[in-house]
Amino acid sequence: MPTIVVVGDTDQEAERLARSLLYFMSAFRSGEPVEPQLLAEEADEVEFSPRYRGLVEMFLRSWIIGSPDNAARQTASLAEELGVSEMMINPVTAANASQPANRAPNREFTLRALAERLL
Image 1 (cartoon, rainbow, N blue to C red):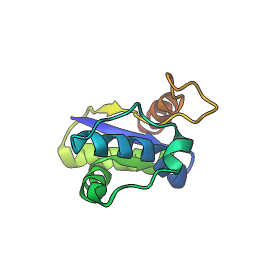
Image 2 (image 1 turned 90 degrees about the vertical axis):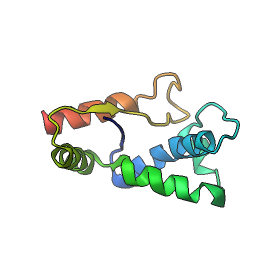
Image 3 (image 1 turned 180 degrees about the vertical axis):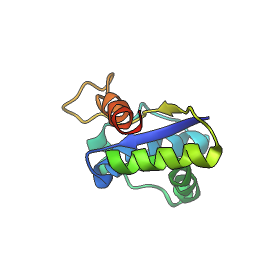
Image 4 (image 1 turned 60 degrees about the horizontal axis):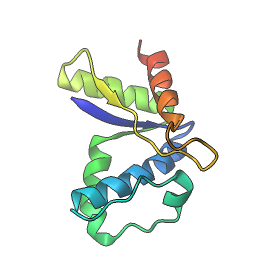
């Protein structure tokens, strides 16, 4: 089961980094035309349409978003709940304007943070 995970230095930073993907996925799942994923700073300025509310709530229930320690706890808890010993982590997150958008270094940060705490 692939699991979307966004890790930031703090829970608030992780939530900020997840906004871009929340917006993209809400538009995509609504059947609306989609643009490339926004940079984190661009997503900060976006107002979510009320029609996205149900989708955003659904995503937030199934995604893991948080600080390294909180995300690791949530990941371990989900694995235990599902009775699995392996999980596929999809580290999707926005890049900041100062970072290369084609790399989004937070993806690597997410995987390293989880590996340090779970392996």
